[in-house]
Length: 361
Ligand code: NAD
Image (cartoon, rainbow, N blue to C red):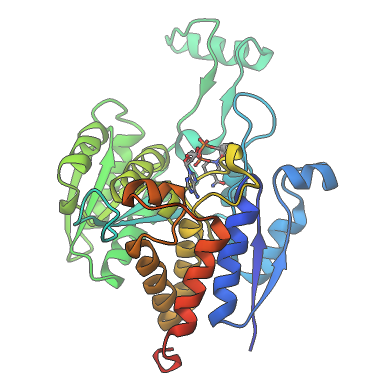
């Protein structure tokens, strides 16, 4: 029976990398793709970057593969990516980083960042400098003895007990299900006692329920530790902003954003997407690396229970990268080979998949 999956190509390089992942999934699984537009292309057609039918499609199919979507800096519409996560309550952002032979600077990285996806400074509670409501808010704070410069803009960082509990619990369950031995909570509780401090206290309580090693690290120290001894870490659970930053750092440890996959998981729905953004300067050039999106599709197939097919795609993709011949510019400059385009690298992976013994499926 055909599996129905929502496909959101996104904008910038999104449509190219999504097309690669789609071609590869179509090699091994019977999928009916329900294609919906979000981002810049949707504005032209629907006058909104996130039409309701996009969310409805994911609600109906329960699962989506998504390309990156541009967020204008400083002005314009708010992040469509953040909005999708919020509206579908996709509270867990899972971002694995694993060394790839002949590519990664570090040979022994095999960790997963579990990032809280709905709270923190990403909650979108912001007061623009000079606005009437901002002045009122500043006056309100003044009444409580909090003096903030009048020419300030303000972003609020909410972190709840319930939000922290469910993300830390998710991280421990992930560790259990994936035979991981340790969970590390990352925070800045020494400075932000009532938000990060709360997160840490909740994490300690949740840890007591599991027979898995638990430790915590302050985020700045964690950044250094990840560069010096990343092999010590297995599952890292953290509030939204630190998770975003550390997952790019971890992508850098193993070969760059071009190979870093991700999943946004909630109670009812799951949206799979690469860690990288829409890289507008490379859009339409058949240049960028499709691996991050292909490996996001691999996570999606595992989520659907298609473990062998997911393993096959992953193995063939890693083999193409490690051989270093049919690879895009970002890998070619590390392996010292001549780069090929997005679609040629995809062709090479498909060729490998077709050469595999169907009995392995
Ligand atoms: P980016 O990830 O788009 O690109 C940064 C750099 O990483 C690129 O210039 C390129 O050198 C490299 N890169 C990214 N993807 C690559 C790939 N597949 N292959 C090879 N190299 C790759 O980050 P940015 O430039 O900061 O953001 C561009 C836009 O994307 C912004 O509007 C941002 O808000 C948005 N964004 C969206 C998402 C999402 O949709 N989930 C995530 C991050 C950023």
